[in-house]
Length: 248
Ligand code: 0O2
Image 1: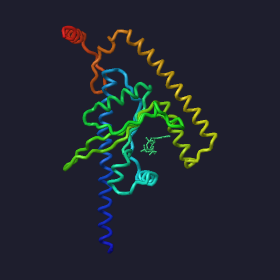
Image 2 (image 1 turned 135 degrees about the vertical axis):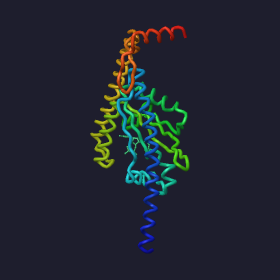
Image 3 (image 1 turned 90 degrees about the vertical axis):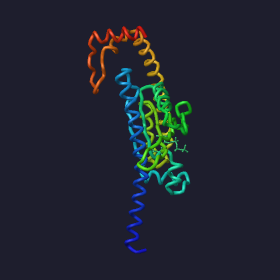
Image 4 (image 1 turned 180 degrees about the vertical axis):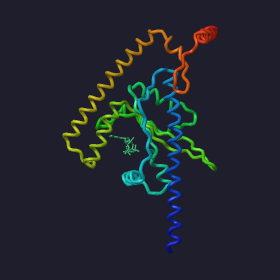
């Protein structure tokens, strides 16, 4: 093949690869917008945000190829797109276990989201102690000339689960999967400690919530959240709103 043809072929491959990866970027953009809306709504309306932080990433081409080899998946765009469902991924970190399920329900309740698979590694932890709730979703991405359903993996976990998983991931890669027995043992013990902490925090959280409910909701009613600022509501307006809602 002459140089001109080769260059043209490379251009086509590069364009195809860019289009393929962009699809996942757009899906992540959409999902992040949905999650930002939930976060802002929680902050302003409910005065409590169950999402501590979130991080999104697109799997690197090297990592996609490694996974294809590990799972014996032929390296063609079609196969990869249909079989590697975590090319686009979002990790949501919460304070409490109950928040994980609340967020999962809210996401699953959105009409344009299809739930393809749920893996509950909290109720059924992996043998090494790994815990997290995984959702494989598909969301529509609208292009100028077509619509595509794109897979996204959402991992939802607590701060303690995340702390453990990050360290375990580093150790696993440092030893290239051959982790020494004493470290595996230490990791299993740490997973149990992290789990105990989560359970303890959940109990405290429930107790604090009960105490909060006993207090009047006045302080939540007298602010108007706009532009990320909290504007005090004029007393007169507040009274007329309350009168109206009492009538209804
Ligand atoms: P990375 O680098 O985080 O992307 P399956 O399709 O069900 O046969 P798969 O796709 O491995 O197998 O699914 P699974 O088990 O739900 O794991 C998907 C992701 O969850 C992993 O992605 C990790 O991010 C995380 N994960 C799963 N198990 C563990 C674990 O034991 N320890 C840690 N730290 N993370 C885990 P990748 O592609 O493996 O890696």
